[in-house]
Length: 328
Ligand code: NAI
Image (cartoon, rainbow, N blue to C red):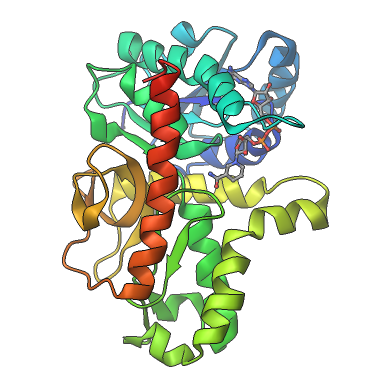
């Protein structure tokens, strides 16, 4: 039987953590033949709550779960980690400027990057969920110089999944009929969900919709502002859907994406599509042999170009801010 995979989850006592840990332990993150050991990282005040969740994990008697350890020290939590799910982050407080937010998150993601560099396994794969996810991933990556840069990714899979469902509803088709949808740029309100390269039943999705006004005034803002709509309705931010997307991202990374389709993930740019090299930006991606590859050769029309550029510009500004703060 396979050796257990060490999965480190930060922010384990938070609401995404609660939705995520049970699915990891049941085998949905890596596959039903892969045993897992959970390493939970929390701040000291939340360790007791994490212990409570660990008791419930025990009570599920998951056959694949081979151990749970809880830490309040990043250095220990990432020891031997094969997968790092960086969920815990500092939320934007009232009146907090973007610089303050990035500074506060630098205090979390810098030491976590250092801990990954010092102690994680050679095959470590990192997914940053905690916002601002792309730039938090950049901060962690820059403090892990011994880890291949492409092992640091940020989550736009929730945006991707949201876009799939909005399109499926509009065209009254099944999710399974939709392929090659892309989220470009930042996991923020500037993100660009692209239907021009997507397919519905093999036909061009934008043409199948045939309604530019819906695309501009309905589809794009609905996907980009879905997080705020969930908070408004639920009184709390997306948690189970975010956990679900994290599962999808890592599962595909490890096991590969299906033939004839791609997905969306924020990965370090190699300069493709005019995105400055090194920025962690969302692209159309496939996973092969455990590595993400950017889908090449897509046509980007003027409409898409302007939107991709706007989101990438926001990422450039975030990077410049964390540079000025000495965080990267
Ligand atoms: P939450 O507030 O319920 O939980 C966050 C947890 O992180 C708390 O238990 C907190 O104690 C912990 N934490 C804080 N600093 C930590 C540190 N230095 N080390 C370890 N743990 C630490 O928040 P929730 O709802 O679970 O969301 C977590 C993050 O995910 C937020 O930043 C949120 O904005 C982001 N998010 C990202 C999405 C995406 O699509 N990329 C979607 C939804 C949420």
